[in-house]
Image 1 (tube, rainbow, N blue to C red):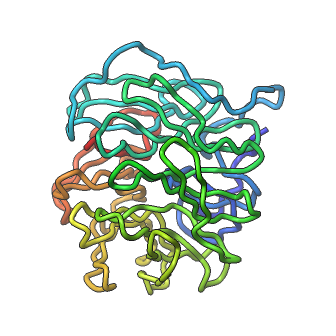
Image 2 (image 1 turned 45 degrees about the vertical axis):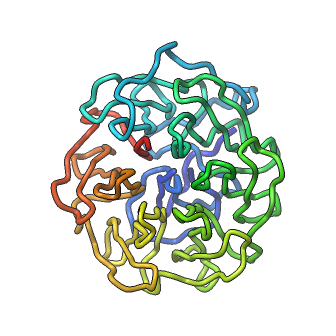
Length: 345
């Protein structure tokens, strides 16, 4: 059975919590990249406010999830959002809606948690992390929720935090199949998995650079266990360099569409805020400035806005702000917890 959260720190994101021992003073959602880390040996699938799945449950992770509604998502293009929410019951499901709140549709629902991943570069598919009794898997579905499939096909291991390559041919993800969290790459159909990192610490939450030559990820390899920084490496795993040098715990890297900046979550100033940083380590800027706990940043396709989750209204809501942090607005406005947002390209 999935364990109840033993959080000492959180991540959403996706958002999507891969297991590791993580000390922190930050408040925490369940995911982010999906994402934080627990003392358990599996990816944590349940939020503090949610009951754990029943011990009597016997089903394993499914390879296919039927869409809740046989409908085409409304509001195409960058005006559409995919996210996870427990508004439908005890578990997190995957929803899409237009940015004005219309056209809300549940794409994946069931007696388990599903956390949204990013849209494919052509906007026709959605990655996600699904949960079974004890482990998680990387899945993909069509934009209307049909054709959901387990890509990682590794039921004895935790798999999560998937990210597309810019050409849609590859997927980077996190796996514990070798005993600790490492970054892997596989073909878009799940074939040819290749391990990219090899460190005794935790490496997770990969994101691809827009030119397809680099991957940013989270790791505690140069710090005390559970204290994470953002790193960058070549797509073959070479040339690993640490990007964030502060004392904060950093999660959820998200590459800007022009490749010049990475947005991420950090508690550098004592609370969970969204920051941006240039690729040379300069220009670190706090965009949310302590307005609640903030997680899981994702850029708009044109790079002018950032979507993220925040509890500034008392529960987890999806907000959209300009890339400089100005004009934040609540997109979801629901009493449930809404998390792990991605805008459609």
